[in-house]
Image (cartoon, rainbow, N blue to C red; front, side, top):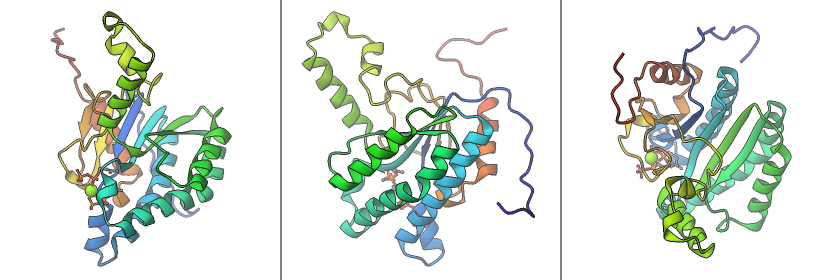
Length: 244
Ligand code: IPE
Ligand code: IPE
Ligand code: MG
């Protein structure tokens, strides 16, 4: 934002979600609609991520989980996968300073082991640098899949030799990548697609969904505010009746 443009002031919202998940979808279509290669859309998507993180800090969202690359996205052409890995690497190098300054605690969920040693180290360094920040926890889901996460949790539980009777929903939650974090209250999926695509399938059991039609690169501060506004008007029942 430059000095000539005052950001719009928004009225405070009555109920903020403690945890927002975002399926950042539509980069490819955004690019296509402009006659650009898909990777240009991913680049615009990374740019937008910076803006949305800034807005999340501004609006006071405590935790955000961003779906950046799924366990299924390896099925894309090698050139696109390579481009996405390069963008992750560049974005970390370029943005980590500002994220740190803004009090963002960066985390990762998923499996890093398929990434190059150098990229793994870069991610680990960013996590270590920001570990004591407390304005916003930003989980980057990269090579993340909800089913893979549950398989990993089951393996860990079996390895620990826990007796069957002791397995509860909390035990499973505490073995997921998101252990210790509250479940997402709100999951946003940009670009109008009405599916979960393996994102937080356990944790999102009672999430409220918000699906704007805009592609991810166009999901700006106003759009985030609209999502939060929609959330604040939802009546959450968790299977019960909300009678006065
Ligand atoms: C989301 O945008 C980014 C990733 C999945 C990595 P897409 O690349 O899925 O964009 P569309 O859905 O093809 O438009
Ligand atoms: C989900 O989007 C994954 C991310 C946004 C990282 P996809 O574009 O991969 O999902 P599908 O293939 O349309 O279900
Ligand atoms: Mg997509």
